[in-house]
Length: 205
Ligand code: AMP
Image (cartoon, rainbow, N blue to C red; front, side, top):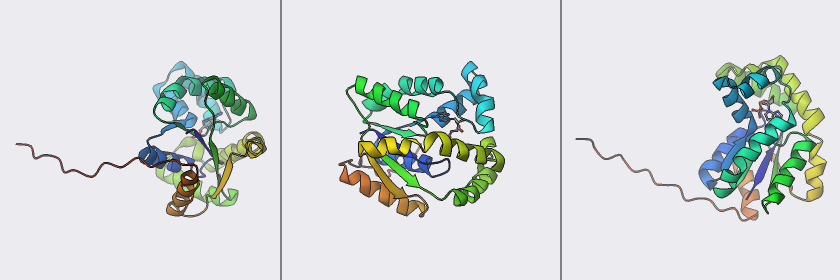
C-alpha cells in the first residue's frame, strides 16, 4: 500500500509516518529529511538547496522528484511507501502518479491531517525551542505556510476527484489522531505487523 500524508508543515505528518513505519513495516519517504541530510552532509545538492530551505521556500520539482524516484523501488519492495512532505505541487503529484503507474502501482490513500493554521504557529514555536530547526523560526514558518497555501493546498481537489482523500482531525491529541488514522487504514485492509516482544538481553559473562 502506498499512502500520502497530507497537510501543512507541523501538522503531525512526521509523527504519524514514524508510527506507521514501526507498526506497519512501511517505509517513510520524507523529502524534507532527505534534503536536510544532503544539507548536513554538505553535498552539492545540499549546498544548492540550503538557502531555499532556510528561507522556507520550496525547492525545485526536479530535485524532489529525482529523490523520490531514487528511493521508491526499495520502499515498494518493503511493502509500501508513506509519502511525507511529497508531493507539494501539482507537477510533483502528476510525476508521482506517472512513476507509480510505470511500476504498475498507485497511490491507495491520501490522509489529510486537518489543522488550524493559527494553532500551528504556537505548536511550531514550541518545536523551535525544543529542536532549533532554523526553518521553524516564526518568520520563516509563515513563508512555509504561505507556500503550502499557494502551491500545495491546490492539490486537494486533485486527490478529492480521485476519491482517495480521507480527512482526519489533526488538532486532536496524538493518541486520538493515531486512532483515527488506524481506523481509516483498517477499512482499507492495512494489517499491523506483529511487534517483537521485549526480550531481556542475555547476561554478559
Ligand atoms: P519538511 O520537513 O517536509 O517541512 O521540508 C522542509 C523543507 O524542505 C521545505 O520547507 C522545503 O524547502 C523543502 N522540501 C521538502 N519537501 C519538498 C517538496 N516536496 N517540494 C519542494 N520542497 C520541499
